[in-house]
Image (cartoon, one colour):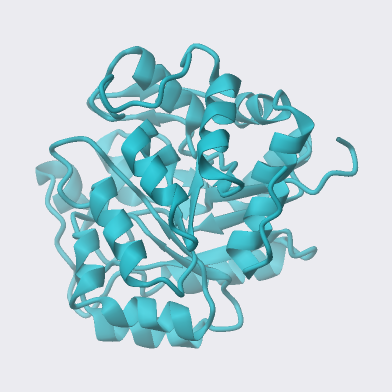
Length: 317
């Protein structure tokens, strides 16, 4: 394993003052934090993006009333994307971290697109997390189509957060798949193992432009063992022993034919808020990866990530 190239395709670098003021954790991580954790477990490269709620939103309104209110003369990610690009230029001299710029598909789209254009050459793709921003992923089928046209123009891969929780109307897996289906020339990574939804995973397996990552795998396996609503219910869930996270990865890898990828979600492999209290470590996530059979590990952590990032041919083990 010493000479393997290992990618972590789903990480975050930055800070979120709304999470901090809400008493949620984690709320910050630096590029140096991420690189140190990667070095400790033999991870070669990672894909990173900013945190979810940018400073364009009033953090006190969010923390005190749970509302997202844009500050005057601001737009989503007007500072965070450029700041992360600057941080990587300073602290990632070996170019191990590939940056995805974050965007909000429901607000101030012309300003966001103009800002993204300025980052071409410094970013490797795009990332969207609509649940926390309460923006509909389906806006990418309508008013925000230009964002995906921008991704197609620059051959940028796109990472999309997914959900099955019934109260989450912003990022349902069926809507995420509909977006990917509408843009067949864009390479998508649909995150979090599609919440173990077997029907959704089989649909993804039939779409040549869709990859899936396993970000925050240990937390999701725990939620499956608890039959929590944040993952697919027993009737729709992939049949696997969720007490054995490595076995779950092997099972889903078998469904996705070489388009399943390893991602930690660092630092969000842990999440503590008013409802959940889940604490896992980067090392524990990596131990699950390293316990995989070598061909599966090579596919999830190298071949599939390179295909998603760069459009390389997928070689199935």
